[in-house]
Amino acid sequence: MLDINLSKLKICIVGLGYVGLPLAIEFALKYRVVGYDISKLRVSQLSKGIDHTNEAEIEKLNMALHLGRTDDSIGLDFSSDLLDINDSNVYIVTVPTPINQFKSPDLAPLLSASETIGQVLKKGDLVIYESTVYPGCTEEDCVPVLENTSGLLFNEDFFCGYSPERINPGDKINTLTKIKKVTSGSTPEIAQLVDDLYKSIIEAGTHKAPSIKVAEASKAVENAQRDVNISFVNELALIFEKMGIDTNDVLEAAGTKWNFLKYKPGLVGGHCISVDPYYLAHKAESLGYYPQVILSGRRVNDGIAAHIASVILNQLLSKKINLNNCNILILGITFKENCPDIRNTKVADLYNSLNRLGFGVHVYDPVANADEVFCEYAIKLIDKVDINYSVVILAVPHEELILGFDYLYKNAEIIYDLKAVLPREFGALRL
Image (tube, rainbow, N blue to C red; front, side, top):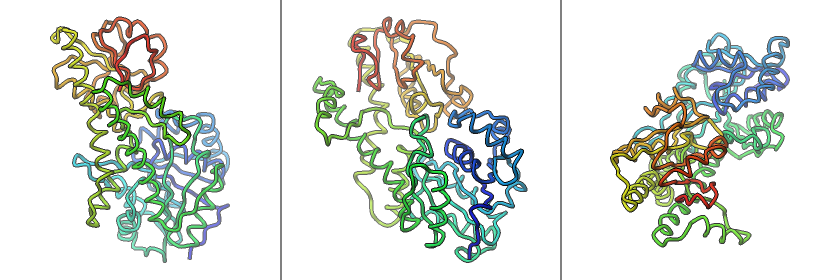
């Protein structure tokens, strides 16, 4: 039997990235919270009120830290030491769930976090997972690790919940508390407790799913649906290009009907939309069903970067531009505008496709962390743009790249405006 009083909670958030940090801050304004991360550098920076993801409201972060130093019942601390989390009674896991080189789920971070929690898990504790997974993962993959490491029994000694994260990195309007939260628990009583816990900080309210598997599936479906819809528009772009029709003009016309879904073509990267469909497909295949629509959408979207590179090559050839002296500038490397998140960015695929064609390619991004980009993709960002380029590709329209860069667009032989944000007079190519 679980005996947790909401007013006396000590919550441990495991993983302090784009999802975990905002969650830790919001909970810390009402409960005692310790944010745990294996990165000592991350813990050190956050303890000083520094957040390189730009997801935290710094004023709120500092308020939570101040409360943690002055009030024993609420507030926030950060640590990478197990001793600092062993007296928690609710653990919330927000670690990444990527895919490997074979596009299969990589559960290593999730299982490692489960093992860490298992080392300090006590009778009566609750473990809630927020990381995106396939249906069944919490109970079939994570719970056995918790049991084996702790020596405790699931739904007797400890309990689990699942509440999929819905953070939209870089979005300062649809923030954590303003997005409805799906909740679930391993028993009806736990489901209600988990729902009450999130309801205490989520202004938009909650939706209590009937089971953990349903909650897990809901998250996978959200992103798979967006992926398939964008792949449809990307395929239209490939068709309309052959017809000499501007895809965005077509979408604008079609969008005048009230029930038309206004998706736009483009690169589909990031930590969710380009990853989660593979989790759903993996689970389906393990049950003997081989999905067609989900994976076809992935194939279309994964091929867009190479297509753009081939279009640029053909344009250079048609304009009789000397390929040996052709320099290409890519503006933006993050997976979305006005956000430093580089996880699974497809701009890296575009860079590699152009590189393989033998071009000299430079990348400039005033928002991304250059060290992280080099470590993750072996791409060295340039510090400033100070020469003319034959080709300029506006890949990620950060606000800083729209304002004050007219000289680049006007001097380039070819402009590729990947998200169709530049004025028509530039004559940019678009998907």
